Length: 154
Length: 154
DNA sequence: TTATCTCTGGATAATAATTATCCATAACAC
DNA sequence: GTGTTATGGATAATTATTATCCAGAGATAA
Image 1: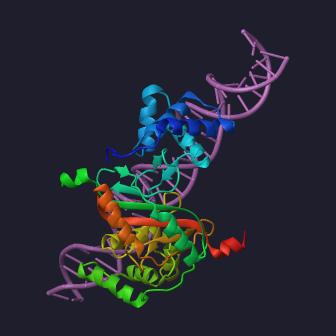
Image 2 (image 1 turned 180 degrees about the vertical axis):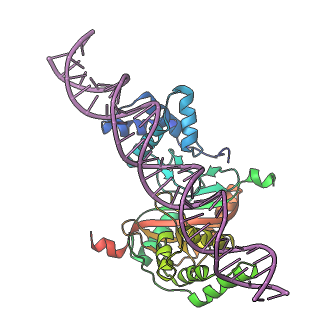
């Protein structure tokens, strides 16, 4: 598990503004550490782990604690500004670009995570809701396999 | 999180036979503890947790260790005889009736998990594979919301 | 600018699900 | 039955995440 490769991208600058606004408007302080974390989340086209965020932030603020990363991520989750991809076996990965449910494709060899385009989920959600009687609030869709790079290296 | 409710059902007896055969044919021993676990998995229309399986088995073999449950589940996973639904926050749940990828609907209040009917995933998998270049091996699709029962109790 | 008050960061301990270890014993082939 | 070896049980270890505690930074108003 090393790197992420990713195709398009939403506007990272805009996302940073949104995140900052979400914090400010609710009275949360914009500290240097938080700002650093927000930037990483807003810019990254990959889906960083807690560890990788921590490493990046420490490059600028060497005393930064892991707890600070967790606290900020928890806060952003509550504000709906980041999507958490929790895995039972490896640690969680985070998506700050598209903080709403959407499909992911995950390479089981290198850990790369990419966001494919898709519109069919809303239709499917409708069907599921009708068939089951559940009031569906969100979903999670992951595809697993080998990315093109790892296929070559086989 | 208390109970599971479930509609149809595959043939539990047949599933038990399949599981037993999978173990025997590869030289694994059929111990009383294993048999008890297999029966629970094959019959349960819900999606039992490690704890609930442990509790059930202990009713018959009081000295059964949690480790035994984990070992057997790991073995069955390797043999493709059980589907593990791992969650990052709560513990894992297991599906012994349909040990292949399929959608689940999960009640975020009571923890019930049901299996809706669905055929559309194979088509979607095709699309994903073509769009991303990944060689997709499996997937995971969860819908979250409130089950009919928990909606009433709101 | 300074005083005040509260939020936040850092260090560390605690938690909880799962996995690893070790050895006596039960399962199965012969 | 007997011998070989996988398995079960008890328990320690692991690992990601959360909780705790307090000094100090950030905001606010005078």
